Length: 177
Image (cartoon, rainbow, N blue to C red; front, side):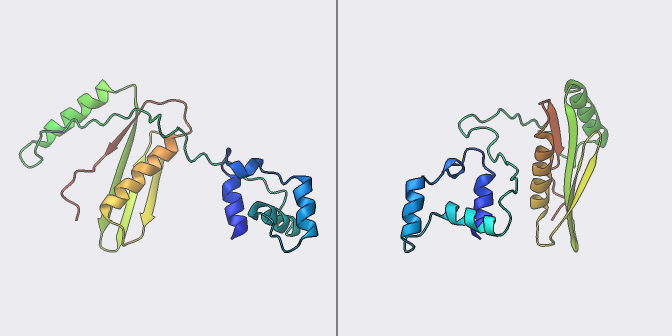
């Protein structure tokens, strides 16, 4: 358990324990007085050394790619607002969608969908060059599936320098339970 915690803190670039080194004087004090317990990071280093895992390279994970006070601007657009599905012809929705795609043609389109049926919950995301699908646990709701697939899409586009993406998601559906 201490190794797991140690690796988690090593994965964060600016974690204070990454730069923590026990001074030689304190090391001698701990060696002279075995009743004094070494700090967790020092005990874990000894454990990893004894297990021959001290040369393992830990991949950094940036949990916060942007500081909490500098939230990037997201735009939420719903071109179908004000149109009732039961009283609007399907061709109207198709025209609205095509107009929207034309208006944002410089953006990379990403399509997501989640679904639930008896004994199956799943979701998928379609990129211009790839398609990903996920099978979720049966206890998940369709809303959970929608959130998982949007999160997956966001994680996939995170490494790209290009920032013009548009995610199409069906979140306001009444056909799902």
